[in-house]
Image (cartoon, rainbow, N blue to C red):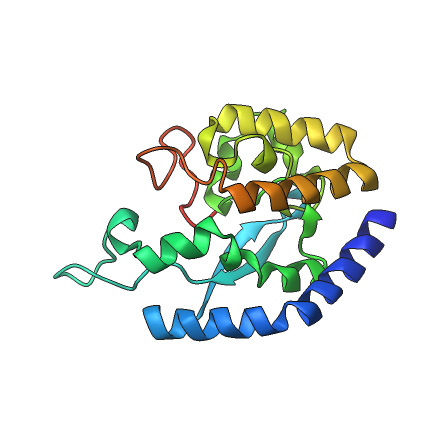
Length: 199
């Protein structure tokens, strides 16, 4: 209950205080990538229940001669990379937190199609609401293996607390400022448990 109250208060304050930045980013996305400004995708929430996650779009709509989207690495623009490196693309997720789909801190939600691939222990990451940031994100983010991420996620599920969440939020700000662990060298997506590049 305390965690949820903190999420509501912090996300509401964040949406109000960061509204000028959100408006500017939305305008820059429109200018650089066109419409739509927001990227929407169904992800698994608490207990695997689907919800629609919203983010700022970071890739172009480029397609091949057959009308199929080009590979992620070819659709990623310099502007999109900067957007992700600063994590500004995550700001709309504050709305998901306010609605109760997500928490500020928790395991990052991947794609629905990966749910059958989890082991019983790995699936425990869905026992709580997914987060904008999490213990795995401040311990390597995209520079560690999926197996290590899941172990960190499950460890967080068993050890979560409000004070721990505040510590993770502070570490997240530090990571963003120094751009630590933003992406694995030479990769836009992971190779093993291949999560969506928009994670």
